Length: 279
Image (cartoon, rainbow, N blue to C red; front, side, top):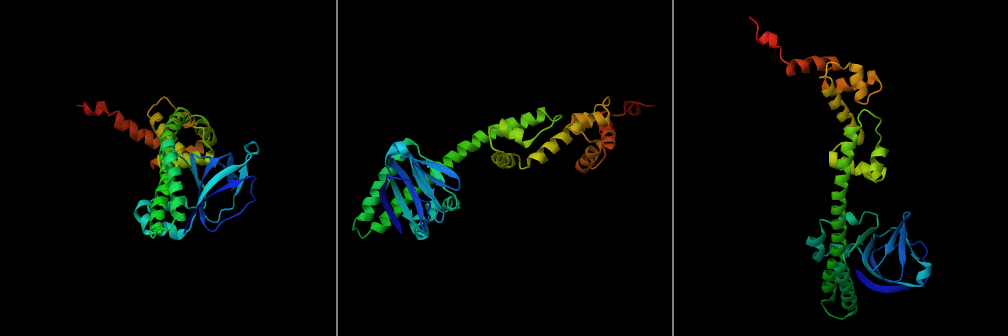
């Protein structure tokens, strides 16, 4: 089932749910759709997908007067049709995950989508024996534009986030001797703690605490090669304020105590020249 129509709103609506999915875009006026404490602006350059079962309502800006929106409502059967089988099977599932998805379309894509919507409405209102098949193909293109814009945005955001994570790794490396918190690192990347945690793990394959711990223990191993530093000084410069905790973490990571690591490493790095040249 696919239905397409436009509707003009004079006032904000009450919270409600639907048993079908809604894909909408704005025509004129200023409005937003609100759900789960989030507000999504509606405009001619945005497509918004509201999966079935999500409680939402529309808010009309007071200075806008009225707002006209176009809706495409469809059920599960519509996305299971053969015309969607190949084009959408890899991507369509992830946007029906009980969250509203918003796609900011490029100007050309927005014009194309608006024209496709007009054709879809005419097709559904017509009497052609092939209307159902034609409508399915048109809707497939509209939905692909929505998914494509989301994917493009995600890739662009991921590229920018990778640079932010790289900067955070350098900051961590420069401050291992100091207190380091995930909140400080997230703020430096201009991310929320949850977003930073997600991108950091994706980029490093480690949690923030695992990465910092590994970096500190690597630094400690390097510092132990400097015989002029006591083990206590090595621990402090590596960011450990509790020497007992340092010993436990170091032995767990290197399978030997700091003293044993120093003795073994120095013998490997600085051979016994006297022994090699002895008579």
